[in-house]
Image 1 (cartoon, rainbow, N blue to C red):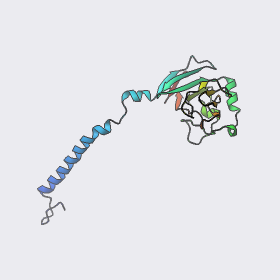
Image 2: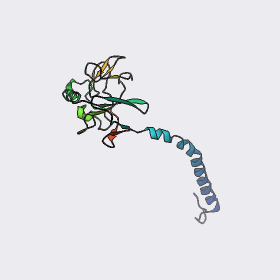
Image 3: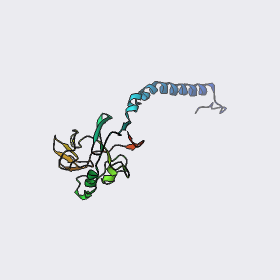
Image 4: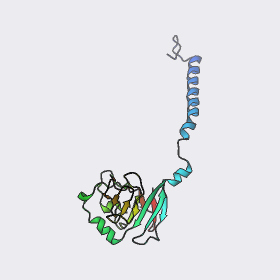
Length: 188
């Protein structure tokens, strides 16, 4: 009880208890704040969380590899033939029928249009260029399906970055990306 038993009014002692408790709380918060604040990413990390890439010089059939968050990202301006080949693949023929696309909700299917930049930009494919088997870097425009081939263990990806043959368990991941203009892609 924090009041004088006889009168029911707060005493000087009650005030000292409350003031001491509040000072302890402020002191603890002041001591803990530097530890919490040091966990926030610094400006250079935040700047690396997204990049913009100018793809104006990429003609159909050309690829570009950029580095994002320490990983290679493959950007490909696919030809009409590559798009048609990717569209012609039945989802039942895929080893991993899920999209693995950061732009889509979980469980979406790995259709070509869902893995590309979408309607009107379906010629653009942006993928994290890491084999999903053991993290190797696949070779572009190679393999049995004309997409990517990982020579380390023999994984074959098609022209939409979907695993078709070999030990890799999943399709190559598609990062979150968008076009900020007709020729600039923002990744992240």
